[in-house]
Image (cartoon, rainbow, N blue to C red; front, side, top):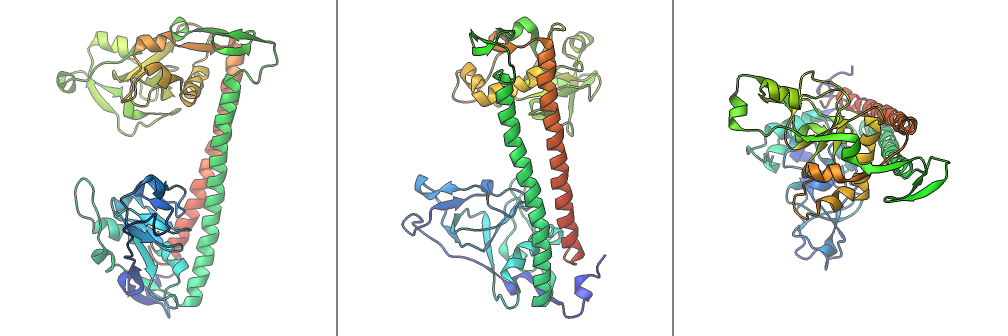
Amino acid sequence: MAEPAAKRANWTSVAFGDVVRLYKERSCDPEADGFERYVGLEHLDPGDPKIRSWGSVADGTTFTNVFRAGQVLFGKRRAYQRKVAVADFSGVCSGDIYVFESKDPTVLLPSLLQFVCQTDAFFDHAVGTSAGSLSPRTNWKSLATYEFALPPLEEQRRIVEACSSAWRCVEAASDARRAGESARKSLICFLYQGGASTEPRRKSPMGSLPGSWQVAPLGDRYEVQLGKMMSSAAREGPNQVPYIRNANVQWNALDLEDVATMNFSDAERKKFELRSGDILACEGRHVGKSALWRDETPGACYQKALHRIRRLGELDVSEYLLHCLQYYSWAGRFVAATGETTIPHLPAERLRAMLFPFPPREQQEAIAGTIRAMDESLDGLSRRVLRAREVLSCLLQTEGWS
């Protein structure tokens, strides 16, 4: 590993505020001043130094802080989210975003500033100087005291070139991952419309489908049952059992880092215990969001905010239905089924009555296998993104800033 920067010859220890200026330009009427875009914290992605989304000033905004192309935007609220980006356009931004620029480009290269702000040491300082319990914020006075070692300009250029090359690898891998996600969505829509089948098609209650596909209410092929309601008594009962909540269910994935427990009697465990191959689908808010249970926590049960969807026989493949649920979400069929405009809910009886396409089992297996292969490829792309980010992180650390 490289020698710490503070000990390198010709490197100078500086305070952040000595070489960086907090940009304070304001615009009382951004649209009249010619600004077309605004950026809020929600538009900054953690760990991504590129601004990929924004709002339109013409649609209205209360933001008045101006930023210019080339300046660095730093999310001062919840700094642990690591939201830092370099603007490639001018606009206005939230008051929870600081706008940084180099005071003197002959001392600190503007292109180096973003990488200084991405180091672990800078974020540790920002988080450590944040105040507030629910929504902690750091402040400029504290950030200005952050000290780091600044190399000569020629060395700065070398560091920028190396870090920029590493970031281009991250971006290329991330772009490939996003393209893969788009291709996956197109593939699923194609498959669940029967596009891969070469057999003659027929009219059905769901439109034109391959002739061998059946259309039936979900309840004819799968058992649909809501889980147990949480209560104060259940929190304190003697038979505490892990149970899966709405928050644990992601699309085609389970987040089991935080699994709660509640009391289940023997009869309740028999009724609500999960089996491998069950589908867990959200009943409210993110209606239909589903994941396949593979017995990750043996003996676990589930809460009332989730539907447990369990196949009734050997005609069907749970993995096929899992992806069909996501297709239905994209197609807006759950929204149509809830008939609500506030927080939507899909009662069990309504889900049972919804029509679904059911190909013969071998076609269900083929569709599920095709999507599984796609998902494995996407997992490989995710690993490439992670490795590329690790290279960039390692490079920033070996430059002596972290």
